[in-house]
Length: 151
Image: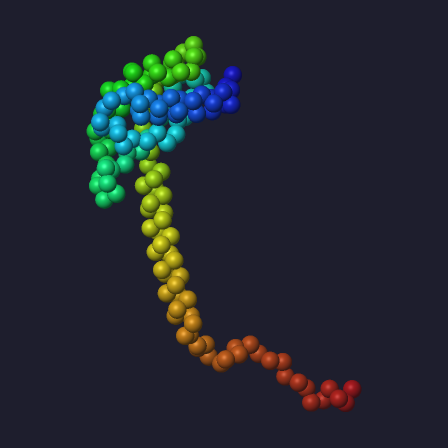
């Protein structure tokens, strides 16, 4: 039987433990700019997928994603031991680290929204100076009959 609430609580706790361990315990310089974004635990609580992002040293610098992935792979055993000690459950889930592509997708969406805003502004600018192609009032006006007064 799957307990989704327990899996959610465990995933939140694993996120906290791994993030704190990367910040304070693991002394690998390649993990200095790694941020844990989310953790998903399977229903049987045997496997945990930990999502992470890597930031660059500066805003214009590219992150060292390959170095961070290698450092996380080498620290997986230590981090799993810390998760086991921090959670106190009978079977410590195995950890799998996956790069999180949500920030890249969000950046791409922001770029698309900016282009859409520019396009909308151009359309609004063109519409402000536009004139109708035909008559100013293209709808037919009902004609008044001259013989209505005779009835």
